[in-house]
Amino acid sequence: MPQAPKPVPKDYIPAFFPKRQGGARAAGGAEEVRTSIVVVGHVDHGKSTLIGRLLADTGSLPEGKLEAAEKASREEGMPLEYAFLLDAFLEEQAQNITIDTTRIGFRYKGQSFEIIDAPGHREFIKNMVTGAAAAEEAILLIDAHEGLKESRPEDMVFCFLF
Amino acid sequence: MSYLQHLEDQAIYIFREAFANFKSMAMPWSMGKDSNTLIWLAKKAFAGKIPFPLVHIDTTYEFPEMLAFREWAKKHYEIDLIVIVNEEARKKGIGYETHDPVTVTHELKSAALQQALAKYKWDALVTGIRRDEDSTRAKERYFSPRTADNEWEYRDQPPEFWGQFTTAVKPGEHVRVQPLLDWTELDIWEYIRREGIPIPKMYFSQQGRRYRSLGCWPITKSIESSVDTLEGIVEELKVTKTSERAGRAQDHHERNAMQKLRAKGFM
Image: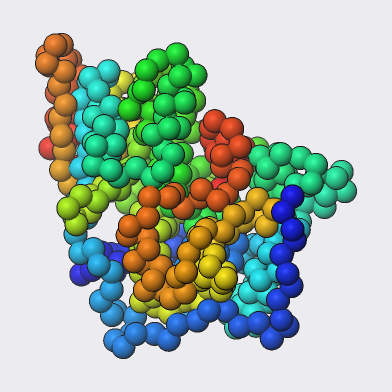
């Protein structure tokens, strides 16, 4: 146990900042655009892995995040699984499958993006739709070794819909 | 329109959708930066007067400054505040002196909240969680149902799109309404700067250290930082590689600690 913090004076006033000129509708916030991109595709074609790799290679991960994924991968008896950077649930990691959609922000060359990982398994299509509906752009990922799979026309239709 | 304005509009929309759809709701308030942003947004959404009570879950391990902030806010905001404490757990001797942070967090926060839910029968709770805080929060919905046992059925979340939210609840269940999901830590600070929102001074450097995230004092660590202005915080966040909740012991107690905590009702 650390030491208990000191008491504060009775006439306490919090940190307070006068409003900027221009009132409630004043312009603010550096980011004017934030593009949302969803990655869709067949189960096991590597959507989460692609995003995890992208986050790692662009240096977008906070300290310790990759190490935590490494540790989780070891506990599941596999080499570093980049997908674990997004698939946070134990159930997802144990089965190495995405159950629910994840939305994660990252910045690259001064531009902000939101990248959305969508599950590929047909059982979780409602979660895929939830993720896809929030996106403005989509990446359809196809494993070249396996080619186009049966569930992908659905993904494409959903992407056009949204 | 700036992105920050989009976030404000969206949060106000979510607040109003919730208030229009639920019979009785409440808003947990921890006196932290996200919580104070929520108060600000709620006041904007409802013409200055928040039409539901605020709830402070007092773990009895609160920083004295947070309690002082609470008293200040009671005087300066027109709020109806309910303070809850899990007396039963404290009587049993559950505390950070003897128990691990996950157990204590569950007992003094989640279980306390569950007791209040049983008493007040709210069918919606407004929370200030954000996706960028934690990887299980990154999988959340704006309107996220909880069972009668205060549990999150994360394996079977409802679909949510086109502004269509889950508003149907069975007796005993409730929905977590989460207007800040899309906000990042940086957005919160930019908004605090834009609006001039009062916050505790602990976020600013004192003797070379400041807090980035606030919780119970025995398990919350400050970071090394000389930043004592809002501009400084914004600039610091743009380059930092440390995660916001790195100083919160309960998150890192074991692998998937947050999943376990959150499945059982933690926010």
